Amino acid sequence: MTELSDRKKASGRLPLILLGGFAVACLVALLFLGDLARYQETATVAESQTALRDVGDPAELGRTLRRYPANRILRLIAQAGDKSGEIEATSRRMLEEAVPDALAKPANLAGSSLGDLELLRRDIKAAESNIAALAARMEVLVRAKREELLSSARLLGVDSPTLARFMAAVDEQHADLTAHVSKGLAARAMYYGGYEKCIALLIREFGSYRVTNGQFIFRLQPTADSYNAASVAMGAAAKGMSERDDDGARLRQLQLDRWKNFVGGLT
Image 1: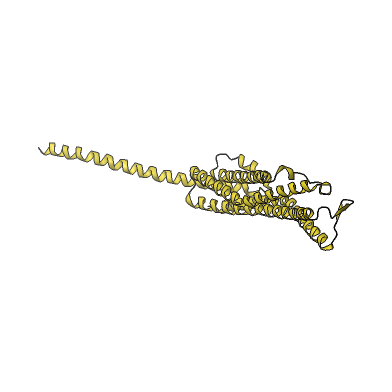
Image 2 (image 1 turned 180 degrees about the vertical axis):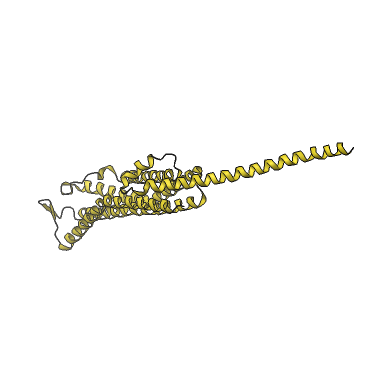
């Protein structure tokens, strides 16, 4: 009986021993996987920092990112750049669509009839109204692109601290881009505002002014002063619109510096 009892006890302890061994094996595996994940994340950060360290020209950034398709952090930056490009392209398209085709080239004001001037004024007012509505559309566009980036980042499985830093950088980038576009919208609003004043004055004074060597000669000096002031405002606005290219180059450099700082601050 004693031998049989001992055998039963031994057979009862065997599953416990196996279960304990399995639990220890699982724990060891989890610790190993945790160490492996930390090692891989450290390697990814190091690779990212090395890749961007010597990039000084914004034009190089895209080529550099494409050389590391498996690096999650660099893929995040590439996606952020793509979304910024989409915002810029969409804003340009919206702006082109906001301006009637009749305003695509300068009008011959000196040779315009009263009917021509009235049609031109109608198109200018339409452009002003459309441009004023673009700010709200831009806000919706930027918010949508931010949500797309957030979803992509989560799918890539980056850790929470990195995700938070990344989205903070995205918000700064989008704020700069929004300010850049808003500056362009303000310049165009100023341009068409001055244009509309010029046309309104010509309509009001139609038949009482003359044109000499392409210059409008008005009966009263205050009328001439008002027309000239509106023309000067148009010129200043046109200059502001042309300066957006230089501002865009500055913005792209700022974005590159921001991503380098983002990667450099990861540990």
